[in-house]
Image (tube, rainbow, N blue to C red):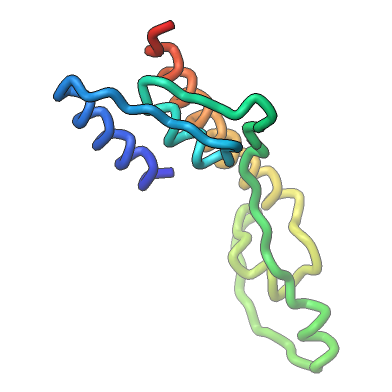
Length: 125
């Protein structure tokens, strides 16, 4: 998203020269729609769609593999919110890790929504 916002800022600078930016697509992915929101006009094919799925985290967990290979990792962990070693000690995400991830993912999604809404509110109808 940082790269898209940087490109969007460059589009804003381009528009300062009284140039119009137009976005057009058959479909928009989440990132494409974020970039399109920096345009003066956004066009979408009448049969097209905007696919917004939000953000998520997926990690691979190796505990079962390590158990099958008879490998015992020696890990020292202090505290509840220490998810770095979870892939080696668990088969799924812990509740503490889910809570921590949902916190920053919610903030990221809210930032996406705020950016798009801010940009869309500047459209000339």
